[in-house]
Length: 225
Picture 1 (tube, helix red, strand yellow):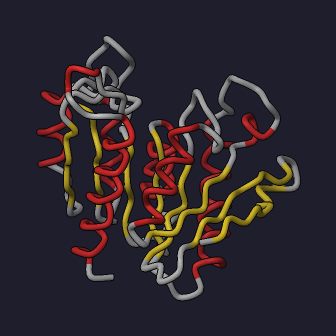
Picture 2 (picture 1 turned 90 degrees about the horizontal axis):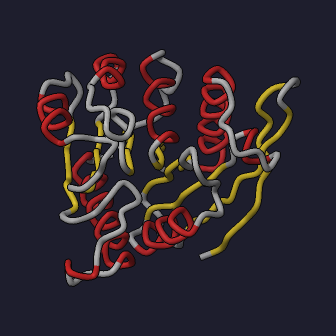
Picture 3 (picture 1 turned 45 degrees about the horizontal axis):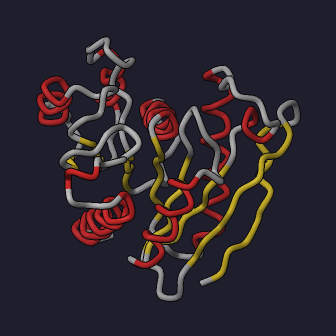
């Protein structure tokens, strides 16, 4: 298992962003893995998830958005985020070397991936994984952000915490059932949007991340890529 740093050109105006490729021996798929709005690709969750996925035979290409590359806190404009997703998925495709290509990410990263797919820009991607899809703002239940998912053709895997304040399951569950693409929703009991679980659950955050990786690997195997 080796970790390698890459540079991904987004555009002449936006320049390059950094990415980290983690490819285990015997990998069976490669995931272009985008971070959430409040972190970057070095966040503890992103690192732990990439390592857990690697243990399950799934390679990852974690990448920065221009704002996180520059050390800013506020996310870029949507057009910039989508351009970065497209560039990162293209770069991941070049690194795949015959592996099936997946895409997705944590929270905002997963949502931006779905928007790029809804626009028909990710045809090479065989499946999309959401590590906490942000269906609505915290405390403001709505399924408006779910509408673009109806235009996504790829199989979708939703990994959601039962205590996620950004995805009311009463709204997310019927949305997922009604999507035209093949979908699976896996709910992690007691987990919040960050996949943190309280001590009373009897589990650790590391165990939850291992669960996410195992479920993702089982889902990938079921796709028969």
